[in-house]
Length: 246
Image (cartoon, rainbow, N blue to C red):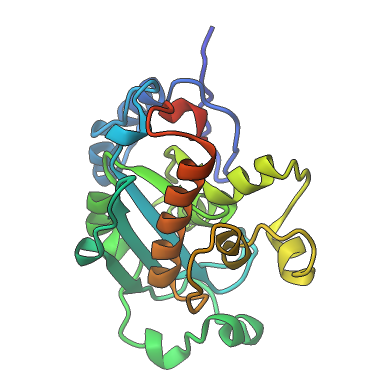
């Protein structure tokens, strides 16, 4: 019986994949885009690899809105790290030309304006470089329905093919620790005083410093630090990657 699910349509489905290495090999065979084929060819870690042996990459997006079907990526920040070190010198930040229009209410949040995007490349224009950073790493995000689904849908709109990869979701870890069910990004934006698992609030629980929010690179660094703290307090360097990735 297959222990993974193949998805051919535009809509991203967040089903549980039990064997990521086998799944990525299958994706490599089925992908029609040479750039994605190369990405899948790099594979990923064995599911029993301890966290201490993992090369992570924290990833964060700013978008034109929260609707994955209608909105698009306008900023990408990423930084590689391990359990003991964050490699800021190898970090990267891009502004991205949007596939739709900027919305006034989101401009107020992230501060990215039309002038910032005038000469920005398209997502496809930086795709090779982006995939080169992502390949072979375990991607770490705070709320996977932004980073993984937006990248999947935006790529599908551009090249007719989406993307899938395993992630560790630091927001999901906090939700699991607090046994919070049926949470959503919109809930935590509209009710910030509820037992919040947003990035800034989650960091406070580990006495991590306050950073300016809604800058993709700063949020990527903040997410990397948060995972390091979560593992220190709730897991161990010997924890197997299969316990955390999704």
